[in-house]
Image 1 (cartoon, rainbow, N blue to C red):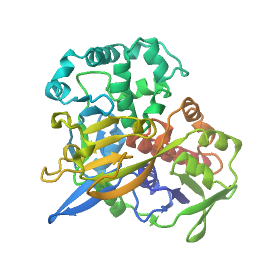
Image 2: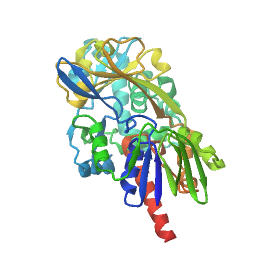
Image 3: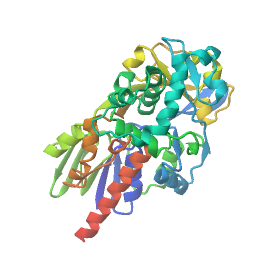
Image 4: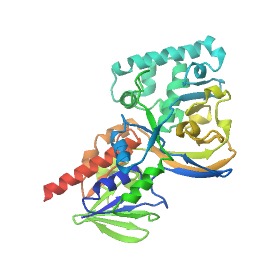
Length: 413
């Protein structure tokens, strides 16, 4: 059996790994490198080389069980990381971090600020009550906040910047997110509790270490720099047209973004148009740099994740990751990754463009229809867009595809 996999992000690599015993597997990748959002940059400064991640960074064993087990199988090591979150509001001057009281009250005057103290009260109330809210699929996050009487300080200075950072969204889109989607994610990742949260980890030496380990162990073929232009399906299998020519396979696993998948199909069904076309994406520029101006003025507020609130953040996600703290890099040189910087930065090492799924009510409805197109017409779909948009979601969707394909093969035999 010949299986084509289109895309080499986490979903494509996981599918290839799990299907390599089921037949001849070929991965098609448009880029010169494999890994997708798993993207490590080797930066040489002053005779030292630093491995800095700009896409996938963190995971934990509780919420990423399949991905964690795969790292273990590949022999890839990881280490604990700090997952503090902070906010800098350029319009009001507010700065705070969540690493402790020193970071939280780094601006002493906030002790007397009704808005800031109200934010803290609302935050604690939100954690306490979130899992008991009676809401439906149509309720947005903004509607929930207003219905429950939370203040603007809580929404604008904490909840919205945090959600924007998690899903790489502009602030103006956060209030339109389905509240159930947000609450389910937070509950699953134990973000609705002050104690007993999971230990977050990073891959030692950069996240691309696991991509290299996969490539070294994979028994199939990897066609990098071979973009696919069209996918045709029929009773006899699937035909892939790529830069290298036309190739025939028994089945195709489409492991790229849902909008890209739809664009590749020569003859999409009505269900494929409706489902794949219902999930929008947000483009984000990620800049790897050493310009500390993106961070809070008060260093005590510096956090692993630093959300920026200003007029520009309404139009695009504004968040900076302090990579030294996240990856445990030496402190002799600061490294940051900033999404959509509002101004020209100094000491820029690399720039990438990524796209992230936006989980609108329509996208949520499309997720529930996955079974209508997955495994139909010799075509399978995997990607993080089928769940919450994170690494484990991409891995799990690939695992689902592998199990479904193996079940169908067994049934056919």
